[in-house]
Image (tube, rainbow, N blue to C red; front, side, top):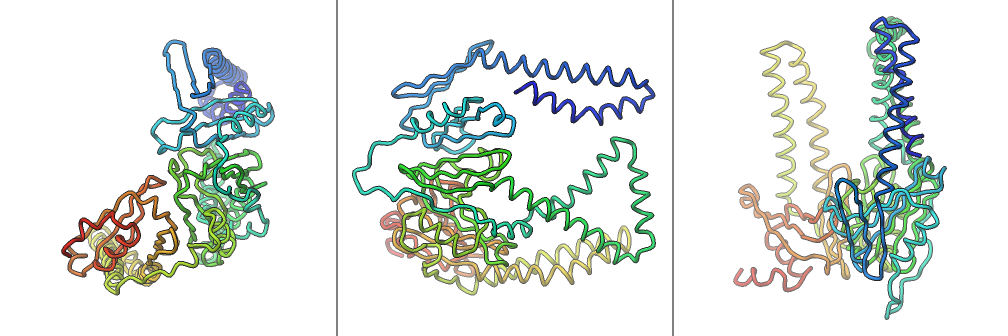
Length: 482
């Protein structure tokens, strides 16, 4: 498997390397010989390196611990108590699937980056499934268990939200960059640019720009659709034995498990494009999850891809085991008008500062910066004001049942339902400008995801009373006499 992967990398780089060597005037037979020798050396070294790694790596599972030992030049022993294991995730790219093996990541639920994962790579897929079942087995609960079964499955109509994601323009721009890089490898960049210029020379500038943008958008849309299919093919979210499990992936399959004892809440995210179409995705708020650091393909926090907003709230309620979704039914308290004024001042100040800087550059360097200055002012000012007003409208906080709910965001809206029992501390901050407006920012500290969730620009009295109500007794000693 390693030899095939190395051979693929070598063959993929053979074309640009050959073009570079050939460009120095060397004969073709010598170029082919050098490249072939390089590929063989790469394959041999990669296979030898993995062979040495496998032959000197052992793992052992006892009643109490999981141990991973590497003994060669450097000896390393990793040991994890079984009662601290919270995740056993399986990943298989196309090459691993061809050989019937998977990559197994055993996590303890501590924050990513703490070097707390054991990785077994590769492992037979049937052995890996048995290993996951054994390591995640929990004693039978004394209380009524959650109803097992499927929570959500892929609905192909959700693919309509893929083109409005942020990846669409990125993929479109990357296509143009890739084309230029590929032509440069073959020494054809001037030819490609010349042909493109000849085709577009007779078109008016606005039409030419519109044509290029349209081409990029079409490529980006097709790429985002393909990416959605790759990431979410066969998606299913299920619950069994106190474990939430997400299965997904077409070429690279991914099975992510989340012990419900680690769950501290959910976050309903409405990216700006999906929000315009009435869609949202659901992320887990859980200990040991910090974004894409632990995941080869996509975000491990995401339990539901962009779907209709009603579906997202339903899934959030089922994940939390609540009859109604706290992210939808909570009565959120609005923030004072001073919070809106702060956002408008920041929007106006940022836009005017950028326009002034461009105008100064225009006076020093040329008229093009003067044009950029008035364009930034005319276009940027309405946009930043609209985003500031949207950010204010999205501000809100409330309490429903056992959950603290906070909402924030400009363009992209986030609604977090955090277990009140999961809040381990409060931080109260107030800048000089906030103090003049009678505002504070509350930070709910929790051992999950980013570690803190903010309630920005809330009235001082209302914010302190809210914090005391959300987690009684935690802030009370500091409120006496206020």
